[in-house]
Amino acid sequence: MEPVLSLLCGILAAAAIFLMLSGNLIRFIFGLVIATNAVNLIIFISGGIVVTRPPLIPEGELTPILPVANALPQALILTAIVIGFALLSFVFILFYRTYERLGTVETEAMRVSEPENLYDDPHVANDPPSGSHSSGETP
Amino acid sequence: MNWLLITPMVLPFATAGLTLGLKNQVRRQEQAALFGALAHTLAAFVLLVTIHTRGILVMQVGNWPAPFGITLAADHLSAIMTLVTAILGLAGVIYARSDIRPSMLANGFHPLMQILIGGVCGAFIAGDLFNLYVWFEVMLMASFGLLVLGQEKTQLDGGVKYVMLNLFSTLLFITGIGLLYGMTGTLNMADLHQAVRAVPDKGLLMAVSAIFMTAFGIKAGLFPLFFWLPVSYHTPPATVSAILAGLLTKVGVYALIRMFTLVFIFDTAWTHGILLVSAILTMVIGVLGAAAGTDFRRILSFHIISQVGYMVLGLALFTPLALTGAIFYLMHHMIVKANLFLISGAAQKAGGSFALADLGDLYKKRGWLSALFFIPAFSLAGFPPLSGFWAKMLIIKASLESQAWGSAAAAVVVGLLTVYSMTKIWGEAFWKPTPANARGLSDEAAAAPLDMALLVPIASLAAITVLIGLMPGPFIALAERAAFELTHPEIYVRAVLGPLP
Image 1 (cartoon, each protein chain N blue to C red):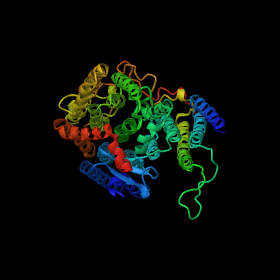
Image 2: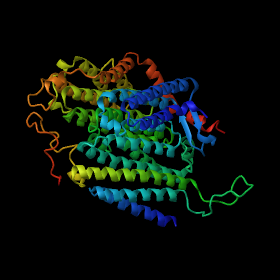
Image 3: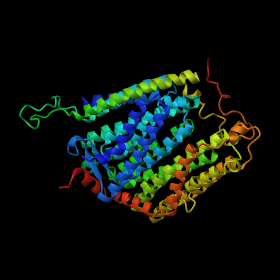
């Protein structure tokens, strides 16, 4: 089971990185979702999935008698999922606001904070650093 | 249970809750934040004094014994970082009175900033990798919010790139945590110190250490992972820039120092060799970016990168003296760098712009501000007798002692180039006559006196810089103690896990 799941992790990670690098905010979000799941799966696998018995201690005992599943990775994943959700919703809002304000979802066209004429000699052409540069902007 | 340990972490969250409750009363909110920041600074100071006299403080949350429960632990390094964080938080709260617009206050500036500071302090006392991850997330969420608060176009653009790369870094971080857990079966840092020795396959462990190095390297702004920093740090208001610049990359450096002195020390020739090369490149590339800059805050942003190189160089050399240098550098740099960003904000208020082309005459118009700029700027460049001189001297001396001639030469040359870019700001913003076509302020606005809320934190931080510079002895001694604990990890391990068998 573990080799199959490990392979799945690899495929998910590759797909996620492909999407994240494609220069489009929407695709980045999809990449992020897939990457988060790939990472959660990695934690799950590295905790070991040999034993499928729930980690319950019988009444009157102090330790489990039979080998039980490792509960810690699942707790970690649960936390990671919750945090991932919060981050994802923030990213959705941020990207939507950015789209509203800048009018583009292409990262190549987003050059407001680092304009292309940044290192031109300011004494020669004293153009406003931003605003003159709205090639990616659509109404 | 050791309540003193968690006070500097709990107080900012309490303040955050309080300021959130006072959302519609802006003045009250400011007072609450100021009070909280004062209490926080006091608590952090008491923590440092206690640790200095009584040794490492440890708290097992819920009284679960060490490798099973959540461990919080603070040694000298944690306490020093917490205190500097608290000082910067206090300076930021005062500065915000004049710098932050009421609309941003109403949108939750103060709660976000307190959560950020709480997250940073939490990261410093986390004794457990997963706990560290959670604090990183807390800190990141708050920094995302602060960075785009105000929603200027540049902020959103910079914010998107900041968020993308930092999210990727946290994904790497948690992947590393998962893999390390799979190999060792523990996430407690002290326990990991012993557990990694038992891992048979050192090659796999090396791969995991590389994942951690990349994740923290993105946070710290190491070459070639720093690109999120210069695109975003010059976009928010000056207070936010200063707090982010002073704190966030340094948490990355802290995490690197913690992991690569306590856990990943099985093959230092290889791991610390990578760090060494990366540190030198970071120093050089960062300062070249600064030398090419045309915007006050972009130059300062590139300086952060270059200075992070010095700190990581101290870690990479991995001798007690080098680590002393790295920790002293952290103390000096956080204060100086935050102060420079605060000054850039004051210069913007006085001259109407952050662009060097639009500034001028500040020396003639604002003599005091110029003097206050001079102190941190030339401290950063490493002029004696300011704090940066001692920091650079320790690092260079450590390089020479380890016979790392290349890194010593790089440290000296980068220092000179730092002077060049600082004189560039000095010449452009403070000396040159205001250009005729500058998009600055009207004459009346430019003549108005600067708010005391701007000058008090700047002057106080400058005073600390001068203090460290004039009597570096106690500060170096403190850094030495911290470095001693780092080079003897068994002290930390014993404090967390109890006496070893």
